Length: 212
Image (cartoon, rainbow, N blue to C red; front, side, top):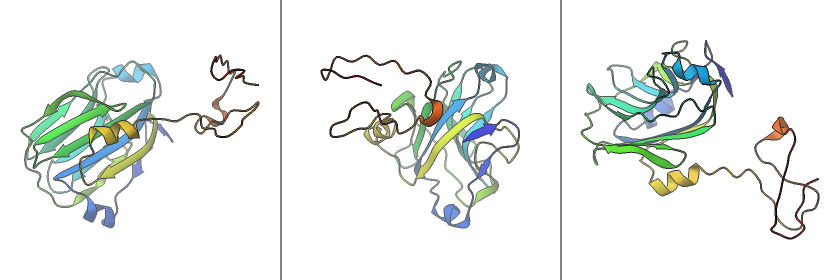
């Protein structure tokens, strides 16, 4: 869905989710697309996905940084910030973002479009645990109307274990076209819907492939 950069957000807090959330290890994932290139250089942070402790400053997030064109895959445990901040702007493409962490293995990793970005971060702090903050367990903002995402977000997910690089690469694959059997004069599109304008298609395999 579209987030307007002003007051759109998705509050994903619930008591059951709070009970299931694992501060010590996990994976967060979200697809994100900024609405226009100028937002990359507006000097403001924005948060596609955020989980913050209710009692301390501990948090886990994938965020647009206030620094031009940067995205952060980061956590803060016990006052120790660890993260990677790759440059993704000024692109206005869709990105698949994933953050994994494991306090026992002492590792944080960030992934963009199925590939790890930056180095594996070590030296993680110790999370306080405890309850998630009702105000700040969100898709699309830090708190309900603060540091709000301007653009599209989709397919947010959370796991209570760090996914492997192979699993993350699989999640980043988008199958735009699916067909089986004998198909003539048609093409199946699982994602674009009414976004098609003029389609130009050239193919040599199989023989006599065409689009009408």
